[in-house]
Length: 179
Image (cartoon, rainbow, N blue to C red; front, side, top):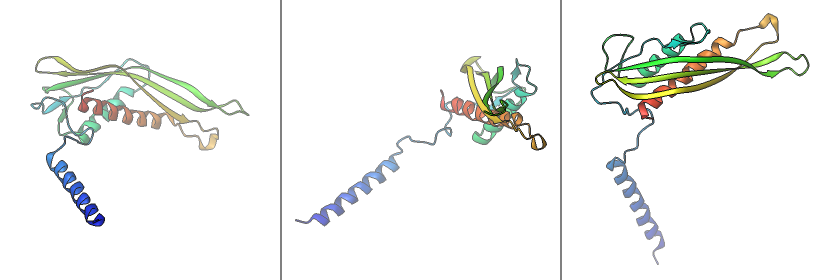
């Protein structure tokens, strides 16, 4: 009975099988790195998003975040206007801020929740075909409210910045992965 030799042969077979699978190129890739866009696309136009809310500059934050995400994750040239292979239109449809937590002793609000609803549509400029359309993207972000007046810091602006980053990351991932 040559048990150790048998185990050695089994281990060699496993290593050989793993090597063969890695050479064969199983089709696995890191999510968000392979585009489902047509191969001839080189440029994407991302005009400023539309703002249907009363919140100042929310559309600018989202547009800037999406452009940064596209530039960091893809090799496409992003333009704000002019000829491009595709056009990504976005719209902020609503934003609401509601109290989330209250101080039990004072009754003061200590945390708020911001909810943003947005739309995004990607259109192929060559044939006007809609490649991606999401009519209700919902994003939420919490932020704390300081009850100490001398050290008060308005936390809603950083919360909106975090939300814009999350929005851009999800939108670009959805676009690249073809969902």
